[in-house]
Image 1: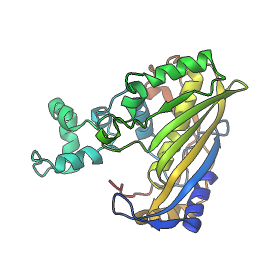
Image 2: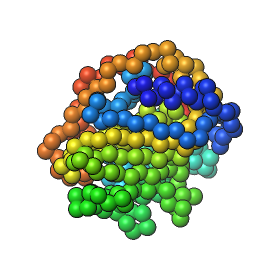
Image 3: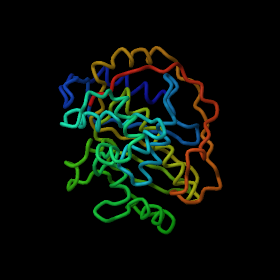
Image 4: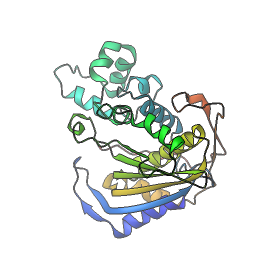
Length: 288
């Protein structure tokens, strides 16, 4: 995806070195926007392999309203494990377990999962119960009944609860737009980890837009990705530069089971990706 590589180039050429919460250090810019036409293919990065299974399961987890990593761990998705593990590691209950052993205990011990697997009122909680409001249900109803509304919004940023979250929402605000029978989505992301997070975020919200379009009988428009603090961690520079030497390949096609008519009925097996031919994956450490 040229849009992603252009972002990487822009940060390297125009960014400023900044300290950050994780003490890793970043090259950072403020304010950037990418547009993805969802009719031109599914925007899944091809300059490195991206783990689609994690993206789909995480999105289904958000939609369900869950905030406990057990569902993810049960499906061998590890992307949220670092934050509850760090909390467990700092507790008196910690007995020297590795993060892999911690995940096994989450998977096999429901009481342990209940105590140590919850992330606080993160994305799913806010999507489904923002101070008593089921934003997702309301959004679908509004798109169907009042598609010209300028209030087709879901916010994950809840000031009343943000301090109780394991990680305050990075992708924090989305607005939907219906025009000529097509659905578009613009996401505002306050903090964007360009190497690890942004490829996931692009694919996740593109897929979310496709799912909502299907259940609302709409065609596909654009996914617009607006970034606040967009940064490359200093320990990801080698990985970014490796991608910049690769030529993007043709985008794959995402096929969604057309029989699903409710946003809450989607299952993992309802999604099939065709024609994905990425370069090999590139590993990088998450900054916690």
